[in-house]
Image (cartoon, rainbow, N blue to C red; front, top):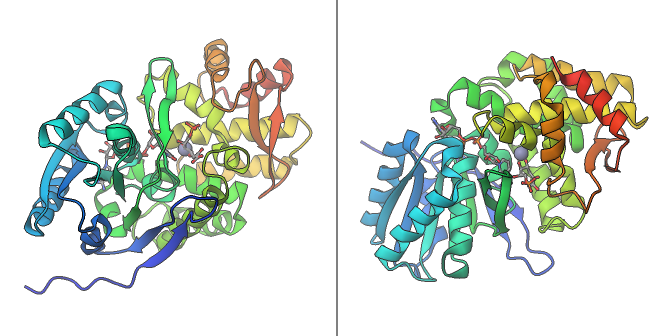
Length: 367
Ligand SMILES: NC(=O)c1ccc[n+]([C@@H]2O[C@H](COP(=O)([O-])OP(=O)(O)OC[C@H]3O[C@@H](n4cnc5c(N)ncnc54)[C@H](O)[C@@H]3O)[C@@H](O)[C@H]2O)c1
Ligand SMILES: O=C(O)C(=O)C[C@@H](O)[C@H](O)[C@H](O)COP(=O)(O)O
Ligand SMILES: [Zn+2]
C-alpha cells in the first residue's frame, strides 16, 4: 500500500530573537516523517515519552525511529496530570540513565499538554538540558502547551511550581491526532483558543460565535484556522518575551484562579475547564475594577458556554482559593497580580485589587 502523501504543512517560526534559538511549529497532517530531520544525525538515542492513552502511537513512533537507525526507547507515562510529578520525572531520569542518554541524544514528547510539559521538563533537567521535540496530540497542546518552552511539574502546593524555560527544537501539530481525542478534551482545549481570542485575536471569537457546534468538532470547517491563529498569538508573544519578564504574562489570562481551582481539585479538573472559569472571573474582575465594559465581560460567558465550557465553581471555596492564588507566579511579595482586559485584545495587569472587589468577582462565578 502506498503511504498517504503529506499535505504541505503550515510553518510558524518561534523565537530567534534576543539570543534564543529559532524553531518551527508545523501544522498539517502526516507530519511524523519530519521527526528524523528534527532529531538530526548527531543523536544516537531517542526517548519517546507518551501517555498510556497513546501506547500504540508511542510504540509506532519508537519503531519507526528504530528503523531509521536510532537506538529508540519508549517511556510510558500516566495519563493527564498524573504525569506531572517529581516521581514520574525521576522515573524518566532513571530510564535515561540506564540507556546511557548523552547530551546529543533527543527526547520526543508525544501527547497532550501534561505529557509535553513533563517531557520538556525531563529534557531541561537531564544533563542540565538536552534537545527535545514536541508532538502535541490535543488542541490545548497544539495551541499552547507545546509552544513557548514553559516546562514543568505540579507539587502539592500548586500548579507548575517547579519547572524551567526550555524551548523545543521543533513542534509537530498533526491534526489527524485530534480524531481520537475525547470530546471533553477537545472542548477543554478551546478554552485556550478563546483565551487567544480575548487577549489578541478577535477573529477567533467571531469564528466560534458564528458556529459554536462546528467549533466543537475536530472535522469542523474552521478547526485548522482556529488552531493556526492561536499558535500565531502564542508564537508572537513568546518570541518577544521567552522568560515572562513582561508581555508574556498576558498568556496567563484566567490562569490565576484556574490554577487555584486545579490544585483545589487535586488536579482532577482539566486545565482548560479551569481556565474557562478563570476567564469569567478575570472578566468580572476587570468589569468591577472599572476597566472592562459590560458587553465584553458578558461575551466571555456566551462564547465559553456555547462550546460547552464551565462558567462556575463552588462558592464555599473562596478562602482556600485566595490562599493558593498568593503563590501564583505573577505575585510579587504580598502583591496579587491579575491579567485583566481593557477591551478585546487589550490585556493589562491589575495589581493588588481590593479584597472586596476580588470577593465580588468571585461571587459572580460561584454557582
Ligand atoms: N507549557 C505551557 O505553556 C502550557 C500551556 C497550556 C497548558 N499547559 C499544561 O497542559 C496540561 C493540559 O494539557 P491537555 O489539555 O492537553 O491535557 P492532557 O495532556 O492531560 O491530555 C488529556 C487526556 O487526553 C489523553 N490524550 C492526549 N492526546 C490524545 C489523543 N490524541 N487521543 C486520545 N487521548 C489523548 C491524555 O492521555 C490525557 O488522558 C496542563 O497540565 C497545563 O498546565 C502548559
Ligand atoms: O505560556 C505561558 O506563558 C502561559 O501562561 C500559557 C498558559 O496557558 C499555561 O497554562 C502555562 O503553563 C501557565 O504557566 P504558569 O507559569 O502560570 O504556570
Ligand atoms: Zn493554560
